[in-house]
Length: 436
Ligand code: TRP
Image (cartoon, rainbow, N blue to C red; front, side):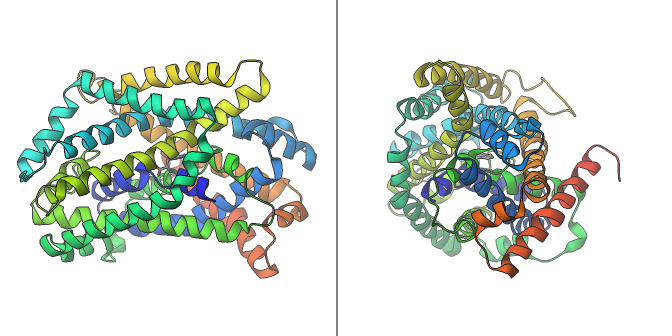
């Protein structure tokens, strides 16, 4: 359970959710995001955990084994294959952002943010983006940290640390929130994020919110399946899922409130994009008493959260190679690590020298990778898992894993078999221009 929480809580909550809220029009996005967590994220997280716990293998071989058990075509294992690739693609940009966080630890510790103004903070971040070598350095460190842990198989030790570090992250966030409340504009932030106005909901907001529900809960690529396979038989999948989903969502929304309170108090742009937290947080830390120390701690905890998430992104691919070939774990880590590192180099260049290179729909390398994974590959993986568990596995087998009361089981089946697949399919139809 801790491992799954460690995978779910990461940059998705602290870095991505806040800026996505701003880019997609505030409350319209938040409402749809919360609905996606409840109607798609929670049921599908249960599904993914149950698949993992039943299969007890890496996602690809695991789904193949479950397909054999159900007596259906083994091609369902594409879920696992697609997931491994998706994880590596996500890590390609995740590691670059993880690098920004590492850089901010050193900046906080050296007192760079003391007394910083809004304009200086924005400039400071732009300067970081404009230096490929600095980005390269930190991206490389983040990759080494991630692959180092995976190569030595010491994940479990790191995951135990979650026990203390996730609550610590919440605690420091409360300090930040309290500070933002006293100096920022919390009323405007609250209004921006929670004022109910359904007319502002746009198709793009729905698409992004659904994609982010997958990203934030680590769903759709096998991370959760791998951790599901470690979950003991007697642990309730439903309860585990609900705790994790609530903690994960709450954390993200609290960061959002803290950030927007500062954004509105400092007349910053809510739709600043991926740099949002890196431009606003220094302003808060730079003015609170003991700010440098608190900022250092904060970015260290964020880096830790990102680290445990990053590990879960490569674990399916590594497990598959190690269990199917004679290549050793260390060699696999070096090879896959290098491939992802190279991808990351392209990503970090897309923030400066390669900014003008557009891949699809006018999106640069970073944006293309992000959109491709969050809005297509993860929901696609989730859709296939839902259909497989809901329509192809034997009902008794599913219930054996979920072990729910009759009514709760019906509820899961209803959301897993109808609401989630129909919702995801509707978004895809829109995306491919088939419906307007
Ligand atoms: N959920 C993590 C975060 O919020 C990122 C992550 C880890 C992830 N494993 C994943 C996202 C699998 C999608 C799929 O930072």
